Picture 1 (cartoon, rainbow, N blue to C red):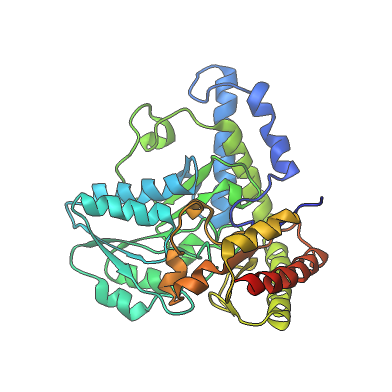
Picture 2: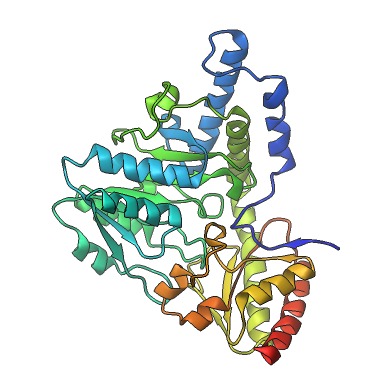
Length: 381
């Protein structure tokens, strides 16, 4: 049975070019980057070359890139690091109700430690109200952390406007860019972004590697004690093969960005039009225009989402009901609830996120089978 994969927001495959560059660092060039001899220096040099490749994707200085184990660690490193380093200035942090669990749970932890957190509402498209943001700022606000693009509904936030507000009040602005990197053109200097999180396995790189962009001059407390790796901000022997893979994935993303965006938009728009044409009682979740190029999220009335996913899986179709980090919980999506969906419509959600390997023919197969499955499930609902 042919597998048709439509869950690229959960993870992407590792591209052959990426894997090819990684392999030597598992067995041939296996030196520890902290070692003084030639093999160690060679690994260290490769890390710094990858740091440059990552920095070019978002237009920052390579010295402002710190390697981590992924997006969740980058979010923790930045949010907690800034909170602890700036607690003498204030203890108030502003975020939104639709953030990734790695941001929401980090804020919850800080709240237990005495920090004050404001959770902004979003409208039915998942976009924050800039006036609510302005009105939430206090004299003790030290950080605004708002995701660039939502992992479930694909909505893109007004990043320029948010950064301008942050600068007006001398507040650090961090954005979770895990879903945006490689899918949107990002220029942290032009956009006024102070800190950004990213992950390798969302851009055809390996799992277990990510990066944190922290603008020069911003002080953070380190979370991991040990050696002096990553400019003494993140202890631990570097994941050299992963870093090499992330660097190559960022390089390929930068070179192919506009072709990638245009192709995914074509697939997404075709899929949305076909679903709305052929299936009754469906609702597109998220902004129709300001959304990630490969993202679509529909709620199907009178449908159990879990049953829908199992039926799709039985015929080789991989999709999801929302964030992979929330799979296994019985609660409705916090994102869909925040945009005003009922529990019933939240449980009937299907997220499909397209990638470079998908074709129009794949989408036709998906839609045709989706029509049949929805019709069958509604009879037994």
